[in-house]
Image (cartoon, rainbow, N blue to C red; front, side):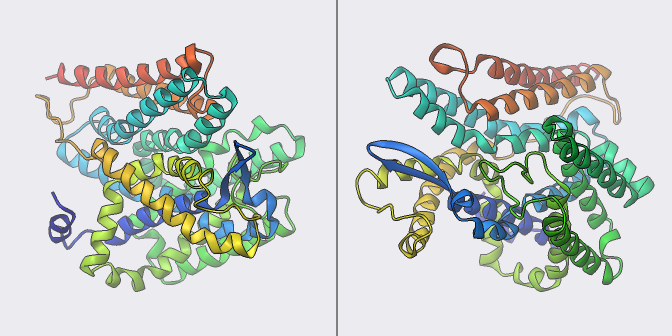
Length: 440
């Protein structure tokens, strides 16, 4: 169905603001990466620079571009709506999680297969292995998000039950625990002690998404203000008096990072942004009623996973096409000339990404919902176990691919271990569908 037809068919009850925030968050993250990560071409060789490492004054700008917390906020809202709807239809947990995972993993699988194949082909063609490793790492670096988000999706029913029972006490408790891990890590300088915050911090924002959906966050006009002002105040204190850096994006070489693992400072930013966007909802919702605006939101959301997964590929392609040929100069980073060329660079990357989305977005288009001859509410225990195994295996595989950047110790640098784990997860999801059908 065309975007225009989808726009015309949008039901009046749909909260378009949720879709807008999802699209806005991903687009901001993509543009932020395009501006921060610099691929260079000097003396016939590709290299890499990071703007945040070279221009410390730009660290404040990450407060505008680091909006991943908003994506998790919207994810909580959408997952709560989806799970509630599934329960109303009589679907069980394996059906629901399998369906949600399918929409995430289909485009991810295509991305991984193409990425590994291209990296292996480059190695076999004699390209410098270090160059291949750098390029493959740049392309795969954003995959971490899928692993965390898939776990958040899998925990949605349990976390939603906790929200219905204890409300905002749940994110408050998670914040206290996350603060404890932060304190332990920073006081001992042992990095792995904060690893739990990769999940804990990103679980807090979906809880706020639940509270947004049921009206808890907007019950009084003062609550969004409290989130915005309280989060902003905490952010300023934590990054000035406290031990956290200003940058909300990882800076190469920095001893303390706010993203690896996520910190209280990053959480404070996300809370402040939550309050701000709730305050802006009244102004932006009427704007989203405009047909062209809504069509743009639908278009972005229609290929949002593809857009996110592939967005670093244009950085490499544009560098290879524009720098060696001299089409685009490489002025000193931070110079006036460099800033003048940034809009051209972003436009070139956007054009290339548009082509990639046109080619690969078909793999994330929703398929017809599978139906099985089962009694409402009937759930095979084996299916539950299998979808949980599928979630765990695919997530571990994705994490390994993120760290290794589509490279490993196999022939031509193929990361066989990570691929086998990921494949095992896909097989487990498939087996869960079969087990569910067998309960009929």
